[in-house]
Length: 300
Ligand code: SF4
Ligand code: SF4
Image (cartoon, rainbow, N blue to C red; front, side, top):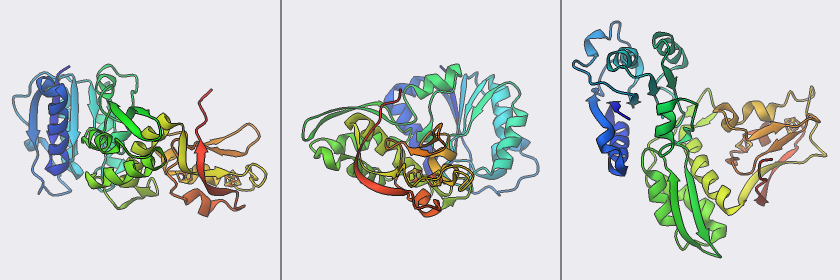
């Protein structure tokens, strides 16, 4: 797989370094550094399109802000790439309207905008999925007894934070591992924005934290804390319009953290719940509360 990378700033360079270090250096056929100080609004981006582009299968566009992102369709076309990943780490980076404009210009190519990059999972596209085998939503294999013995990264955040966290988890008591993972990824530090994303209702930094904690919970079989719906109190249906579903930040980025069951009542997936408590504040019937040590239900 040949990867061509558009990158700008510290966010982009960290990802380039990580994927190169982790065995993908020979797949990178070109890197074009976009200056950080470009204006947000650019009438005509054609003078910014790099010359002499190599053939590529996959384009990664990392950390470009505003209209300069409109070079992506031309870069894809000139490299022949049909697969494009444009991670979003800041709500100001590429407004939804601009995303739609880019999509309308790329023809039959497949483009995804994972928010954050460490939420990327396979999407049914040959090259995006090949990349997502190694990089994207964290997946771990954890050996443990009372303590975490060994952590193997099966898929890691493209920025490298998962490998950092994995190393720090060894010898941590199992009951503390989820919170330790959340703390250590902050120490890395994650470069996602701390501003609330208006489309999600939470910060992209928090979403990234939910993903690494989810990987730990999945392996250990329980959540140290999770929002839980009380089936008796839940009045799901016309009375509340299932607002818990509508406000959950994970649901908004495509996860199944809140499900509405056949009887109209809500159910929360403890594995992916980030304990943001937004649903608790919004449920008009007070049917959701945070519980400790919630077992993970295995999907049927
Ligand atoms: S938990 Fe609250 S908001 Fe969600 S479906 Fe039940 S009553 Fe409605
Ligand atoms: S606390 Fe509620 S809104 Fe927040 S992640 Fe969990 S289910 Fe979603």
